[in-house]
Length: 272
Image 1 (tube, rainbow, N blue to C red):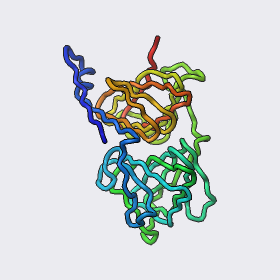
Image 2 (image 1 turned 45 degrees about the vertical axis):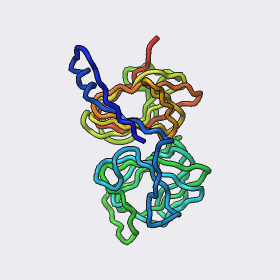
Image 3 (image 1 turned 180 degrees about the horizontal axis):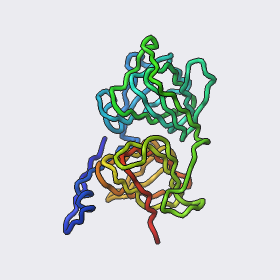
Image 4 (image 1 turned 30 degrees about the horizontal axis):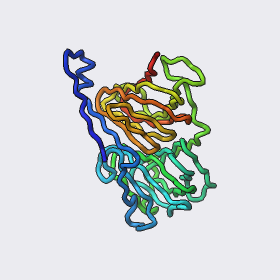
């Protein structure tokens, strides 16, 4: 169940607070995701899909979770749109049908260009990935409709992700980190990143874009508002307009969050 919340500010407003007053946010806990068949044509062999934002059957940008049973392997196929994906749980292989399996663990990132023949496979007791598209609908099509649109797939194992300290923060073993994945970081341009928040972190992610989407990939985060919400892997929070999202990491494990936005954002740790 999506929770859509409007932010209301009373009293004297600056231009910044007025923008935040007109902003909205939404939260979808992993336990609230509604699952359905990703490819109904395959019946009970189909992976499961749960929408976080958008509508994969429509024409809007969309993010959804895909869940696979242990040993799943799709027949060769293509898609009508390019998608990006992140492994949340288990191990997933996505490549040319003749390729040697590359089993990507939690925190790995891959892209699948439209029109290119590929297979997707999964192994593990619980296999789940985040999938996002810039425009729907998301369709599974036969290999006879394959074409080359000049894009090439990307497969980045979690161990090859490059982490850096965000600008404005002091680098240390216990400081937040960011990994730039795709897109243009200039205002108004879509881009995607990982952020890594250490155990004990408390602070805010301040978004300045007109849309902001965040999905917990690893670990557990507390979303701080009047009633604290525990965000487990697969949970989503997002906003439109300028917004500050307050988070706290109490678990001993490092927390990784995938962020897609069309503007800048900053990580602001709480100071003593």
